[in-house]
Image (spheres, helix red, strand yellow):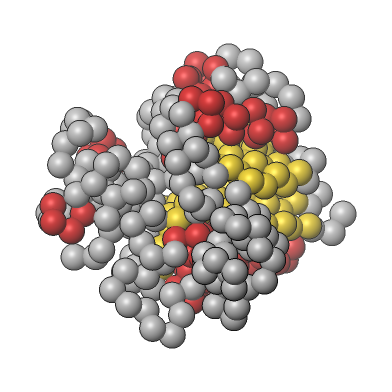
Length: 345
């Protein structure tokens, strides 16, 4: 079948504050002056073999998450973007990045005839480049000191296996069918705590700057090359691509796998979003589910949970290096997650 892609990006028809339906050229409600957000409060996308759900949660005024999904006969793909709450108009960055990224990803995957790791990796890099362009353009002609910014995590399920790419602290998880002891997180957070943990150094979650973002997409981003990791599972399962609105309530892979029940992709995505909202809904929450049905690697060759998940360069060294200098507390101190200030040093 020809590829199909959809995104949650798109402003609602009604003002969330007063119900008005008229907006000026700058997307402000002419009745009450509230800015129209770039994404709806809740959205569901069901493309059968891949599906996602996104919700505003209980504490935010706007849904600053966005997702893009695409599918064809040979592959399925997804992007989840989580706007950085301390930047200006973060929903515009996440929506633009998700839409630009998934459009490019779908178009480029349609051109692939030999699904090997190199081809899929090249597609993912181009898609993230398009997402960065979209996020940067969201700043407008006058960038300002704190332009819109967003994290990004993506996954492509193809004959090459599972390929994930990310910038920031949104995550991808592997949840095998059956024995959940084989579940694992496939990404490494672009935070001080995440990079230190990848190097074998553990710090407390409440340590200064532990959750401060070190990388993001947007007009002021200086490092926008995605981390990329490919693996071939040895059994069927599902890839979960999510914002931190989900994993803050179930961060460990087996913990998340235990609440990931069987069902269609859309049923699973909606159930996980409902879990996060019921657990507190502290943040926007977005989940995309991509089933994996083969090809399979030899038994036992899959990554163990929490191990072999740091992407490596061709020479076998870790592609993510621990920051030599901790962020300045005045610039980047903040709570865990992407609520932390993220101005570049």
